[in-house]
Length: 154
Image 1 (spheres, rainbow, N blue to C red):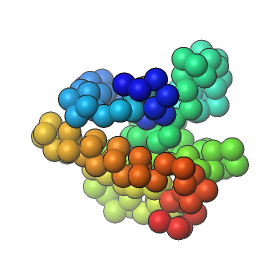
Image 2: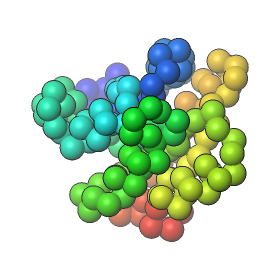
Image 3: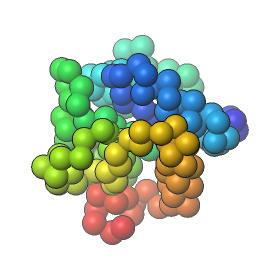
C-alpha cells in the first residue's frame, strides 16, 4: 500500500462484516488502507482526532467514511448528522454501507448528506467487486473535495 494513500474509515459494529470488508479490500488489491472503528462514538473521536486517535500519523484523516447505520448507542444517522454540522468536514465523503433496504433509511441518509447508499452484498465476490467500484469512483474524484456530493453537485 502506498504510504501516502488516504485511508477509508470503516464504521461497523459487526465483527464478521469488519473482517469480510477488510478482506475484500485486501483481496481486491486496493491502494487505500482501511481503518476501522466499532461504534458511532469511536467514529466521531477518530474524525475529531480525539483521545487515542489524536496522532494523525497513526490515524490519518480519511478520504471516505464507510458508515453502517444500525449500531447500538450512537447510530450511523447520528454520526452522519454530526459530520455534516462541522464545517471542517464539509467535503468528507460518507458512503452508507449497510444491510438495510428500508426506503425510510435510504431517504434519511441522503437527507443527512450521505454521498451514496450501498447495501452490503451477501456473497464475498460481490463485496470484492463493490470495494473496487467504491475505491475507483472516489479515487477519480480525488482533489474535488469542494464538489463533494452532499452539496448537490454530483
